[in-house]
Length: 281
Ligand code: AMP
Image 1: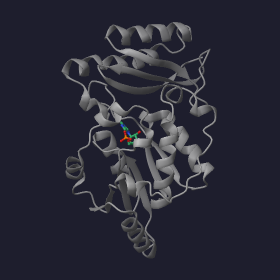
Image 2: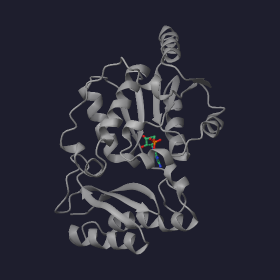
Image 3: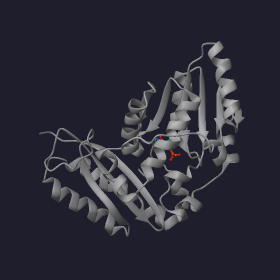
Image 4: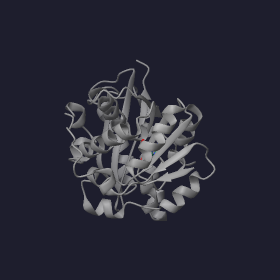
């Protein structure tokens, strides 16, 4: 395992690999790595000759400074977790290295998909995600890049980005990894105290409820009941929507497949989660 902090190190390493005709896999992260990240990284290692994992808490994608400040940073522990994985490069740049002053960037129109759900509640968030992932894709030039379905809307936007800028990378969506009790793994879970950690379970419980009852009552009613589960645990819901998996537009009626997407505040921590729900029509 090698750790690089400059663009130049990545470029030189990549040129060497190109000589050897090796295929690069890429997993972008913000660090505070957990088993969800590790699943992406292990899959990337199994499918590519060499893998880059970036660790960079991207200020541009935080719409609240307090959230950015509170975001966990633990590079030493992250490196320890990845120790022993073969053919792995960690890229942990600072902000100047990630965004050199003279590096131009043409933003991508996010369109309708960027205005829904997270887009509506976190202005500027996806613009920041697109900016950093654009720079990382251009630098790393991977054959395949791995993203979690936990960030369902982000994955849809990354697919758009890939087409818009013509990167031609295989974008691989990976299943959400959960704790044994159902809570979706997230770096933000580290900020929950024991009681909040218990309360946060209501999110996955509500999502399972929607999965179980999809098609058995009206969409409106199921949404209401799911919201009640989350509110009862003391969380504040930002949104709970049942949406089309491709357009992310709200479903009025049940379809064969839909995704229930939730954002809720637990204590001071904003958590998101989603589950695919099939209904027998
Ligand atoms: P983050 O460090 O939160 O920016 O996440 C980096 C990547 O890991 C993103 O593609 C996330 O969707 C993915 N990821 C985060 N949590 C999970 C999880 N619980 N299961 C699977 N993938 C995840």
